[in-house]
Image (cartoon, rainbow, N blue to C red; front, side, top):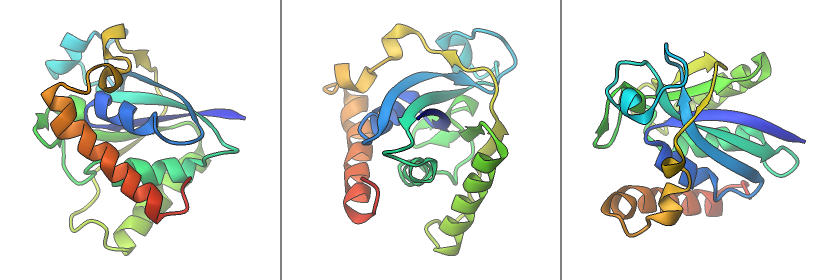
Length: 177
């Protein structure tokens, strides 16, 4: 059965490229969630006045990858302890957030955060917003598959490629396929 997950882990180019490489993920679409206006455009979101965060909509086969595994990948491939930023990407549009579909997902998110904190994975509090699902607005076509089409761009080489390498390391060290 194909299900949906919505994660905001900074720049959606990064988050999209991470989840495209996870076995069991069928599709990843960049977009915007959590704001006050309908159908926002990239330029509006980037000015920080719409309240949206860059988000990816992940379609996944729950027979191949679980929501819990996706959560683990989400938390371990970005910094969930910084408010409104990921590295040099600064602004509310880069905040860490999860938009859950039901109470079971919300409970899994809370359990995942508790486990990460109990294990001491982070030395600061996790500030990821936990929100109920709200309208998802698909990003403009030029943002789709960005890393796959622009691997030679400096941002891709210095920001996204290291995240993909970190994902490979995580996948080799865990039970995630």
